[in-house]
Amino acid sequence: MAELTLGWFGLGLALLLLALVVALRARLFWSQSGLPSGQMLYDDTGVGRIEQPALYDHQLGLVGRPDYLIEENDGGIIPVELKSSKSPRAPYEGHILQLAAYCALVEAHFQVRPAYGILQYEDRAFAVDYTPELEDDLLLLLDEIDRDRYARELDRSHDEPKRCARCGFRDNCTDSLS
Image (cartoon, rainbow, N blue to C red; front, side):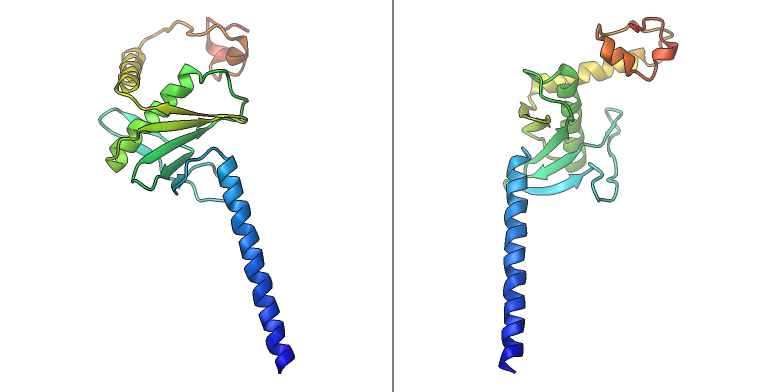
């Protein structure tokens, strides 16, 4: 009987140690991920999870799915956008505006204005402040998109052959670089 009790105790101890190792590895992964500390509210990375619903702001006509939303201990909600490429010296304007759109969606959906968002590249993360100026830039862009929505023709807005080569509209574009 003592051997049986010792066996159960050993198994329990082994499971406890395994749980500790898993918890420590999870904490290490989280700290290396570039994500702020807090509770994950939303995960749209598709890694073993059910697809998250899109966030809507009907007033702005904006829809989106941030990769992560992290609720900080103080109640702040931080959108995180993952990029699969290596980081540029500074975040691209389009990436900053995408993150600003997620900040606006968080504010509309949760009634909490994010102080900042995070652009997480393969090798580096950038915290981008969600300032009134950035919000104004986003609103100007959304107005421009609205104005151009029904235009018959639009000018090409870049000079990047790689970007042009990956564009889904390249076959119908009169300004194609490739």
